[in-house]
Image (cartoon, rainbow, N blue to C red; front, top):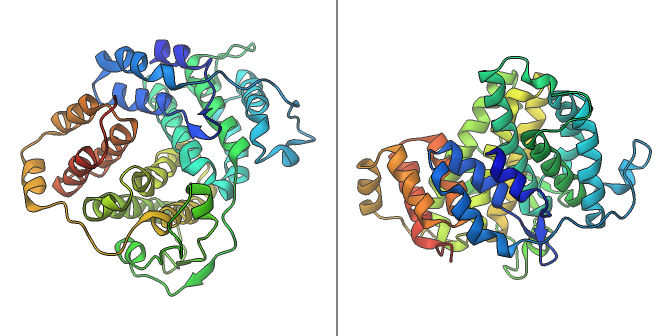
Length: 349
């Protein structure tokens, strides 16, 4: 993991003006999914797509960060800012301070920044589990590759922060399945993700009532992730790549919850729903395409390791990350959705 991140950290988080660099996210998923032997060959194939980290524009400080938020010219400046903070402060403290500042812009960068943050946090939490006290960081201004990855993820999010337009609150849905089914599509399904998200006008109220406890908030998030994964099996054909984010974005929030103060969990549910619902509104088409009973039967016969090995062999970064999320949900329905993504998305060339 560390060697892979060091290879990738000279690259910026975007290419061709706004397309996201998925490599750190895919690498983390591959390592966690038992496919570490594929990582460097995967980077070799993906690396030609990447561009260098953008040059500094204007330094981000405690005095000017508000005006710098959402300014993509300052991607390099934001990355440097978080590198400085994380070199001297515990990563959990930095995350807790910036999480509520960044949540309103969760759909910025087509939700990739929050997804990248979720992958980075998962790695750091696993490090803590193996070595209690790891949250304190190395100190002395040193920055290891895993904290550096969190800094780049947060820097990307800050530079691309983009709140949704003011949304109408539509009639409430009883559960996450019903909420996703009730999402009204945008009027014109054309243009890029930024244009489409700007056309979202309203989302159903979900959950019907605000979670009363952090545990309930986590439960609602698990419900949303499962509903979005399962829905992809029948509706992913609407836009196979973009619709994976309806599941992977809220799952990134769910993965981050254990690192956050519990007072932030309920607001995190609201943001995750806005991201999942907005992506669904922007890309889903009416009527299911159907994954078919054959995929469900195939998923029954596969272990989690076998299923993820198929995604790793396929190689597309979105398929890898979606399979990673589907395995978090578990069960044959989620496995069938992952197999559906492998059929719909072009393999990595």
